[in-house]
Length: 318
Image (cartoon, rainbow, N blue to C red; front, side, top):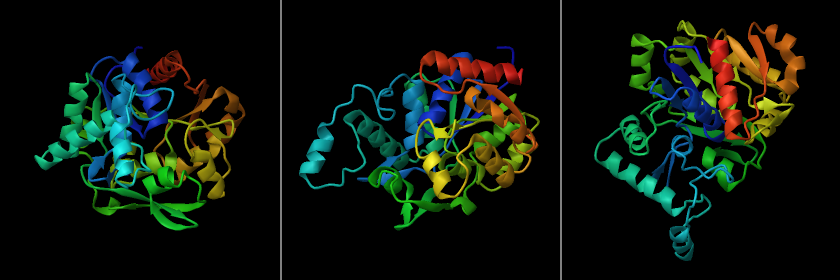
C-alpha cells in the first residue's frame, strides 16, 4: 500500500464493518478514521444501545460472532432468560457480554461523557487503533415508513424482521444534529487521502451520516477522492434488507441504481463507484452518471477477502 495520509471511512453495521476490518489490517495505525451511523441507536430495557458502533468495535477487536453476523462470540444468554421469565420485552436479543457493554455505556453517559468520548474509551480498552467517530453526539433516529405505519428502525429491522413493505425513511432530529466535532477538526487540519463509503445500506446506514446538515458538502469539497463500494452484487444484497427496500421503493435492484441514488441526492460527491466483477456490464452506465467506475471482487466471505478489497481500494487511491 503506497497511499499516505488518513483514510476516512463511512459505515453502518455488518457489511461496512467487514471492509473496515480489511482497512484496519492494511493500515495498522491510527490513520484509519471511521465515521459510524448512530441513527440506529435506541434505548431498550433502560440500556442505551448503539448497534452499528458495537458491531464495528466487536469486529475490529476480534470479539464479533462471525457465523451469526452480529453480537459477540462465545456469548451466553442467562440474563435474557430471566428477563423472559419476568415478562420483559426480549425481541431484541441481548447476550450477557453485550449487556455488559450497554451497562458500561449507560454509566459513562451518566457520568457526563459524550458518545464520542466513551466510544473512544471502549476502542482503547479493546485494543482498536482505528479512530471510531460516531457521526454525531446529538440524537438522530431513523423512522421507517411502512404499510403498518411509521416505526423506529429497530422495530422494523428486528421486531418485525424487515417484513412490512417500506415506502420511505425519515431521520428524526437530523435538522438539529451537528457533525462529530473531531470529524470537522480532521477535515480542517488533516484532510484525508481518501474517503471510502463502505458497502452499507445506502438508505438507513449511509444516508443518515450524509444527511447531517452541511456534512456531505464538506466531504464533496474536500480535496480527497470519495469512493463508494456497492452493497448490491448481481442484483442482490450480500447482507441485510437493501435489495428488498430498493424493490419496494420501485428502484431497480442494481449497483447502478445505488450509484444513481448517491449522485441524485449528493450531486458531485462520488468520484469512484466500486463494482463487483459480476456487475462489470454496468460500467458504461455508471460512467454516464459522471462517476468513474472500477471493477473488482467485492464479496467479503473470508478475512483474506476483506484484506484484498481494502488493498485494491488503497491501490486505486494511490
